[in-house]
Length: 319
Image (cartoon, rainbow, N blue to C red; front, side, top):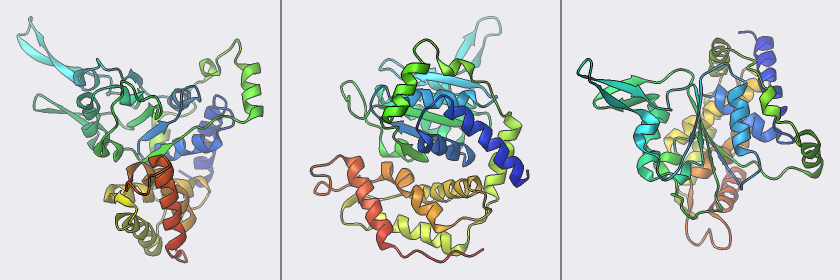
């Protein structure tokens, strides 16, 4: 794939999503970065700001299998992964695939289900396979989980454990739209849902080409060391009980490569890394009790990440 073809194809995806999501360019760009970097996305915000709409718009822009799972307290692990069903005619058990067998899986309100059901996604998100009754079943490629959750209404919810959060490449918040975007939404969506007009603009083969192109972006040893230094700084910071994992460092670099490709470069610069640090590290960090006093853990983690970025020496990138 040539640079021009990459830019043209990613522009089509981004413009399609923007046609549904008004005034949230950063969230749209983050969803595209995660797609190109073969990660998973967690969208966390208050109700009614377009979390599920973003996930559905991204899924609709790709000519791929899409499944939406509404996570509820009575959802079972087998509903997600699939189960073995006995066939009386053959007197054998046959595997019936669950909803996770799709290219794009929308896990809506993921924290509404029990930890047992949440854990059904662990193997799928990390190894892109499902093991049921001793048999391993490979998931389709590409495979992307876009999960949503509401951080405020905690009644009847189950907080995602650290192992689950660590599977998500990035966590983003939508935020409220500005006044102009909200007014435009009132005019355009009173009688029509723009999502119904979305048609796939890329094929699965094109997505595979985009991913391969982003993967080839060069990362110099100095920039690699910068990413590692940021991660290590979180593990020794006095205001953190839990720092970023090695998986987080790997995903930070992958996301930075996708960011560089979208910027028209074939190499990563330190700004690519630092601009993504909070989105990639933030949900993995657990602030110490004294650091979280008077603020949410999300705000505390963001403050600490910004502090670390300001303290770590920025290298001069080379190619």
